[in-house]
Length: 75
Image 1: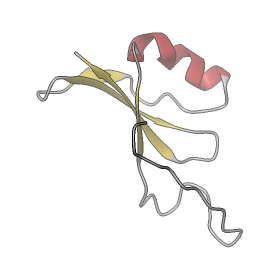
Image 2 (image 1 turned 135 degrees about the vertical axis):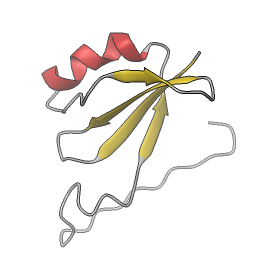
Image 3 (image 1 turned 60 degrees about the horizontal axis):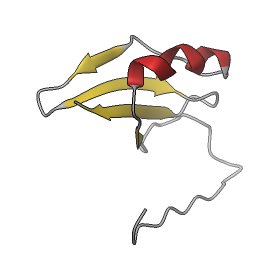
Image 4 (image 1 turned 180 degrees about the horizontal axis):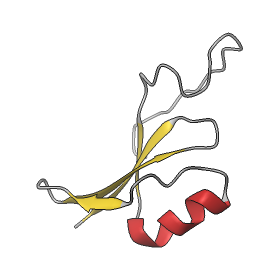
């Protein structure tokens, strides 16, 4: 987006989802609409979404490899 770049690499010695030092946040239009799809796609939808005092609705999920991902929606 704009001037931003995202680089990903793979390390066969790393255990997916551990130790959890990386957190990917993805802004979406409707967090609640996407949560039901997470389990269908092999992830863990966690405990649902919450409204944060800074004006976002956030859901902490895990991808199929166990990595934490935040789905965020501007309120």
